[in-house]
Image (tube, rainbow, N blue to C red; front, side, top):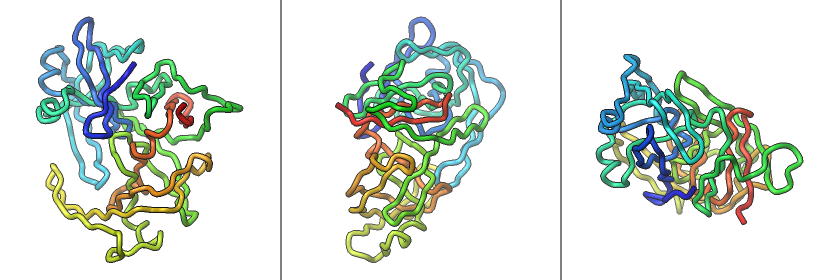
Length: 270
């Protein structure tokens, strides 16, 4: 099943709700909770549960959304009934990208799937073989973080200075994002040549400072050193994690997410 990249790095995936409603969701491995627009919730008759879910953005702000249950949600041959989701006003996103929701790892917590980065495909069952002894892929452990209906996955990176960083695997981000403390740790300074500073306010009103720099030395997976990239553009910001592994790194590979086994496999794309 093919997907379209929107905004340069987001995967817009065809989905079906119930027996006949077809639309697109953004497949975002870092969003935690499935989300649907209020307009779509009304259209499919999704019932509010009376509960809310409160999650944290990477910069630490809490965001609360009311919860609904989607009667049936299908992606290709895989479907689930009674899927939990949050309702959010997505009118701007819907108008810009033609999507009505976000699909998180929660939807796939019982099955493995492959995002074929260069080929722009989603494969269920997974394309990449998983398991020990596989010659074409490199499998690494992940820490699956569950918070009610929210599911996220973390793995470890080896930074150029040998430090270990626990990062969320986040296809919804573009660049590799590291906590601001790693800037000096990697021998960079805020006023150094090639370090760019951007200050602004996000959609929640949070004032941020972001610094951007290119790291010429390799960044690799801690448990699979051959999965390594040089000359990465990195964003540094005060965040609640060590970092987030974004699509700029992920899309060079066929990445198989196996949440049931707490593993992710990276394969060089053909």
